[in-house]
Amino acid sequence: MKPQIALSKMGDYVLIGHLRQQEEQVFNELFDRYFKRLFSFAHNLLGDVEVAKELAMDVMLRLWQKRENLSLNEGETLLPYLFRSIRNAVINHMRKATILTFPISSQEDLDILSSQSADSNLYLQELEQAYEQALAALPTQRRKIFLMSREEYLTYAEIAERLGISIHTVRNQMSASIDFLRRRILENPREFDPILTLIFICGGYVA
Image (cartoon, rainbow, N blue to C red; front, side):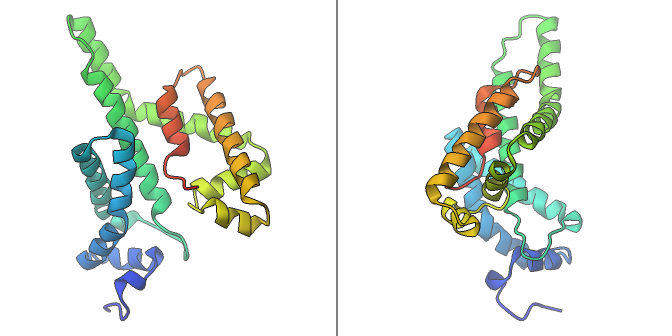
């Protein structure tokens, strides 16, 4: 059955149900809803219009390809999934860009290059694990505020209103959380890149 109300008025939870039926107009609505935000995120970090477009397009394409496996609860949005995807795409691109500038003068160098390239997915998995461990070590209220910003994409004003605290308190708690997570992750024996770590922690949240 075709939707009876405008797609632009539907929440992501409803649209995902239609997307599983391979309704291209639904995908077009989601594309219009999120592509510019994904592009802006990547462009702000990379400063390259074409690369940012390519990464954002790849994320939206994977959304279409994985439509049958997507699941949302009522009231949830695709923002957390999409921003995690574009954040990881940016990190992978930055790591690959570093690898491509690696000077090759011997077979040993070539072996190192191949190893570094294959390591990208493992790097993200280990960074995610280190992040989750650091997140679990945050005080309960501070972790709650951080996740409301990072996972629910609420503004500081919305968080303050929901919790009955001041925006100043939210801002201070977020700053303390980011600093704690960054320091905790960088203490990991894996020796994560400081810039990529900060992107991973802060990627996508709004003030």
